[in-house]
Image (cartoon, rainbow, N blue to C red; front, side, top):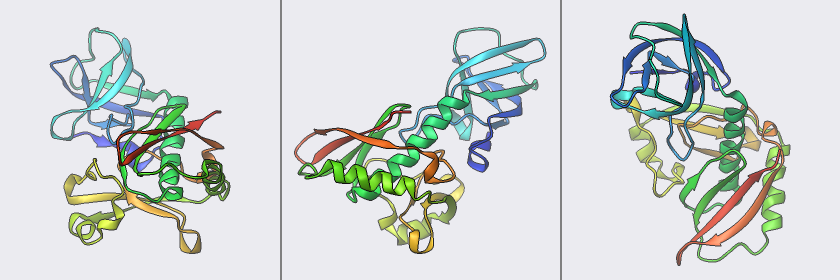
Length: 239
């Protein structure tokens, strides 16, 4: 099992680690990882690791067996031996944009309060698919409402509940196609706002910014029809 540092501190961009395994495909498993593995629509992190006498670029990060997190080298090369101490460094500008985007998509699900049937996160353009038979009448109003939540600079916090608690509160789950992560019998909830300014609370294992003001201005792009009941809404982060 790899300890996911990114869940404790998504702003940690540089940390030591120790190699605990290699994979048959040429990946590296560490005892603790700042690199987020592909999942929940969010791409795996990239960056660099270095050790005494060597280093390699990390192209992406994926989930392995038994809660292992696997760093995938950008090119085949000699790997640091098991037991080697190394230093991990994220491609922080990329990760931070993904954090901003992921939090922005949570806000999109607030201004469009419909079940989510799919989604994908990228640095400049992301999307959510909604169970939405008819297209929105006023996309400009949705964009204004979205950016009002950004400008409100709401806190983004997390909490944990049990599987039984989630089962007793099914309205927390907005995604129709992706089951919430239930590792170790706990489910992580990401909350935006609190008290009178509370706007959202849903299960999520991804990385997020600390406040909505950090996202920056967002733009709603194309809205596509995807089947009889679905609309795909694109969200842009222009800077």
